[in-house]
Every structure is written in structure tokens, then in C-alpha cells.
Length: 139
Image (tube, rainbow, N blue to C red; front, side):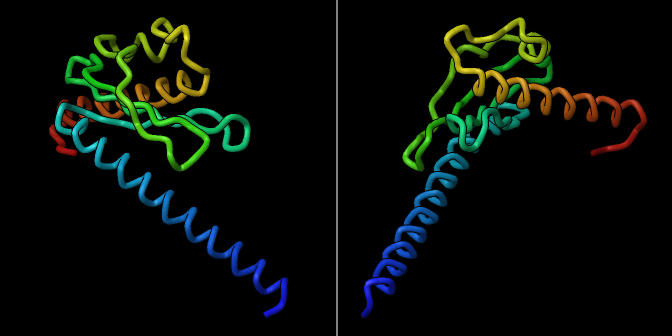
């Protein structure tokens, strides 16, 4: 085997390993989200940039009164990052999070962006459900 062939084989093996670890990370995050979905309306927002400090994913769960009852954050540069509970948004209304009145002081901007996106998705979903009830349609 030539040197170039061995190098390409090593690169291919590393790429497959990275894909497998990313898949396992996604499966873990989905399992964590399953518990959130049982508590109410759940949405995931994304913040940050891919190559400038990484991305953050924030999952919020809100009840019918638009109050956040649980939240998770997944952030990190590697596939070894795990989701963790984030208490800074629990108990606040979606409007407070969207408007920026409820911003974690020590949180990075990418986490705040993700929380706002998640809250906006939930707010939009709940308003669509409310419109469906007024017109007699079911969604």
C-alpha cells in the first residue's frame, strides 16, 4: 500500500467515526427532549454560528398559559457535548424571553438567540392552535 492510500484510509475512518458520534449525540438529545414533550408544548431553537464558537440549541417547554416549565441547552464544539438543564428561563413568560426582558446575564449570545427562537416557535404554535379553535378547525 502506498502512503497516500493509507492516509486516505485513515481520513475515511476518522470521518465515519465522527458521523457515528454525531448520530449518538443526536439520539441522546432526542431522548432528553422526549421528557420535555410530556410536560407541554416544546420547541428547539438554534443560535450561534457553525465555525465561530459553535452553535447552541435550547429546548423550551411551555404550558397553555405561555409560561416556561422546563428547559434544556446543548452547546459545545465537539460531539461529546451533552444537554443540561437550564433554570434561567423557567417560570417566565414566552413574551419576556422573546422581548429580551428575561436574558441570562452570564449566558453567551448564542444561547440567548436560541432561547428567543425556541420561545417564538412555541408562541407561533400556540397562536395557530388558538386560531384553529376560533374557526372551528382542528390542527
